[in-house]
Image 1: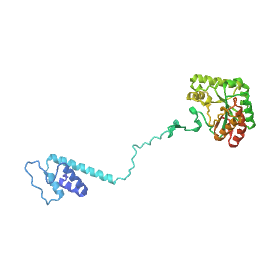
Image 2: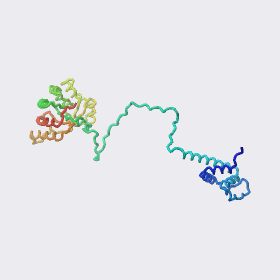
Image 3: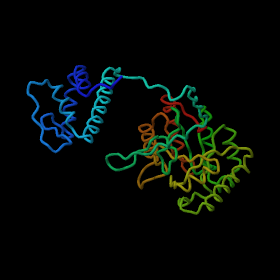
Length: 342
């Protein structure tokens, strides 16, 4: 069967879709083809095409007058236009959200859950409007991260610098009368001098705390090895007086904690404790009477104490403090639960 003539081919394509005819015309014009300006491979000029011809006939007649090279180019353009038109038609009839077929028929591998836990990032302090760093947890808001709060609603009474042969027995008796447990921060030299008082403190169910060997206010600036030796010497004196006793806490004299000091204490399994309430019972301004001093201590503790507070006081050479606590303990027991640090 002979192939269809170009005229019949163009006529059939035009009848299929008017839009295709417009595309075809633009394609022909881009390659410099016009039915009114078609050239032949012969040198003689062509007669103009009759105006009465239809559009398909005019394009077909013009095609026959082209040179062989231009016919090849034109046929390639026609084939390309047909392919693009069919592709556009197929895309217009396709669903709006086609579902992609799987790349292969094999099932996708199920991811194996990892049992390793990722380390949680440590919370970082944020800066307030004043430029100071705000502490994430108020419990660790003391110097170098030392504890200011008990971590519970209980209020912890702590007594520093003892044991004192005159005042510590009075305080132990007062606490026992009210069934209150406290925390005693012992100086190593005093524990060595009065081992019987260390044993009484332990027997009363109170908590022990290391307060350095000789109440050094500058121990935080010492090298780590020297700090460790001081704290170990203090623990040894306490344990010699009360073998088997637990020493779980450390307090720097004057509250002068440094990161190095806290780190060494932590390496020795001791938690560094600061305070939330400081009545400055050790301070005796000139001209202040004993009764005025006692009232000042009572007022400061009663006014500033809150649930979870660690209260600082002193039993070494502070008879007014012991007298103040005779009024304070009943008052505090009505408001709070008084606890020893665990």
